[in-house]
Length: 171
Length: 79
Image 1 (cartoon, one colour):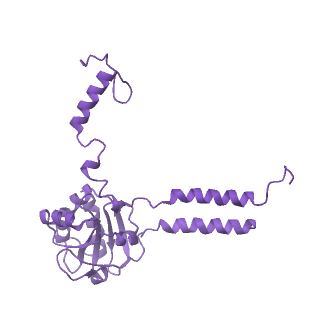
Image 2 (cartoon, chains in turn cyan, purple; image 1 turned 30 degrees about the vertical axis):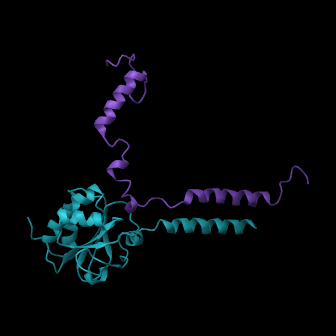
Image 3 (tube, one colour; image 1 turned 180 degrees about the vertical axis):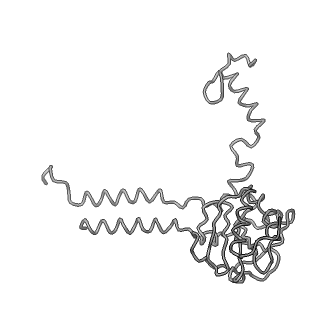
């Protein structure tokens, strides 16, 4: 094979490797998904939230920071009008029973979807746990947060308020 | 075959061989959301920190070892 042939073959291999590390970055349209929630039988889609600012939060019961984030997210959600902002959680426990137990002990008011196969996490190209994506009214990812610390809530609150265009009514 | 001229197929064969070997490194890594089992308590290196501390104490004093575990003892078990 000629030198150019070898180079293009190498380029193809490298490109294939690069595409494998794809991740959804701010500015990109969020990948759509439809999953079964824990609470009801009817599947819920991300598209159902169009017109609202929505925080898509990927979590699992075995992840310490995730467990910490749930009650704080629940409080944050209550600070905004339900017409403007909502949270859609995607649970990634391989055994959904683990998540059910955790949610029974620490209930949240927002919808949590089941994704034990992790294909939605793959579509988003998660880099860590937990990961959350703040998606605007048009379905575009505006912020991405990897990991969680309680102080992250303040930044998130400002980002949500900026996207809604109304300040939060909490102190 | 002249000894100073490499065999024509040697270079492509070496590159192909290297690519095949490298493919071994391309096994799918554990994704962040697949670490549920690794996060289990009984998957920890030292599931019980107190037990581990006691074991280490007996080990370095009885075996007279030094290094990461701590200072070596004389074997009397008294330090």
